[in-house]
Image (cartoon, rainbow, N blue to C red; front, side, top):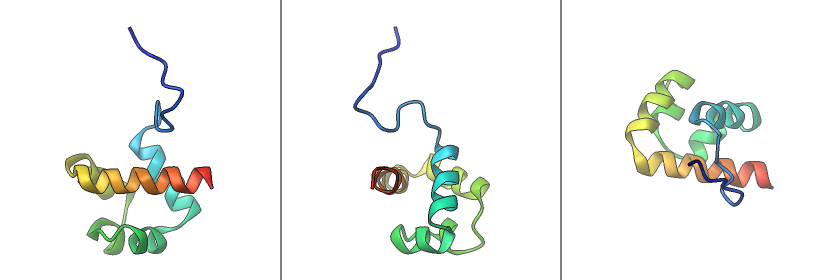
Length: 73
């Protein structure tokens, strides 16, 4: 009963993949500049960022938007 989501650029992409791609592409400093959250600006790590973003919908939304903007540009 799984539906194909051709128009969803985040379909089948994990949050960990999103973060890893952004870190590789932009780096923590630029990510922290574009999305001003503590887990990007103070001792950043994938693990701490995942923990925060899984609990904080508004921050996750901003990070996902940044990912979409980054991979489609």
